[in-house]
Amino acid sequence: MEQRESSWRRRLPILVLGASLLSGAGYVHGAESPTGAPSPQPEAGKPADGTWRDAASGKTWQNPPSPDEQTLEQARKYCADLTVDGGRWRLPTVGELRSLVRGCPSAELKSDCKVEDGGCLKRDCKESCARCPSRTGAGEAYWPTELLGNNGRYWSSSVVEDVAGKAWVLDFKSAGLKSDSGDDPHAVRCVR
Figure 1 (cartoon, rainbow, N blue to C red):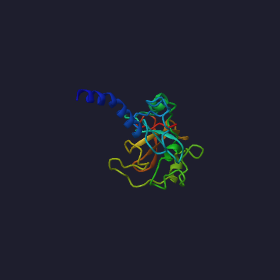
Figure 2 (cartoon, rainbow, N blue to C red):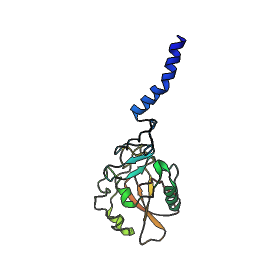
Figure 3 (tube, helix red, strand yellow):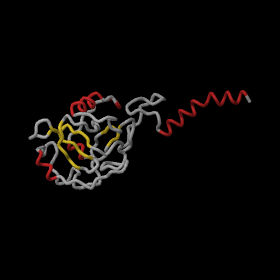
Figure 4 (cartoon, rainbow, N blue to C red):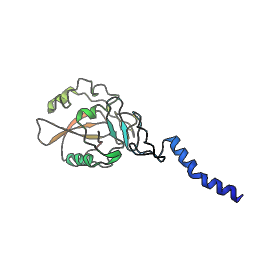
């Protein structure tokens, strides 16, 4: 009996490792697996190690977002200093944030809304951008279901061209664009 138990205990780490490999647990994107082999690349749409890759845009997003709301300068620094999955993060442009909008056609990137880098960044441009009814339930937001976080306002790196000290934010509760003072605290989701 004692010999069987001893044999079972010696194999336990191998069983756990095997189960981890089969489930995908324990992989850090870009790191080596417990066996020394390169870890698999995350599939589009699957959260992995604090990231989510959008198959539509090819961008990788921080998931979940920052736990705290921040000012615009704090948000820029936070993204630049973020080390999740090897770093190289930055604050997204307003167009990149809009690429996350799902379920509100009037605010999605291919809509009549002109607010985006390379388009129009003046305050009056948001008149071409319609909002959708507010989603107030927990976990409800106008973004892909795989994304985690609160459905509030998120900073972009895009400044409002004709109003000093303001930048564009996207409120994922209504998919509405707003121009807010850089001193206002908002949520942050970094991109690369």
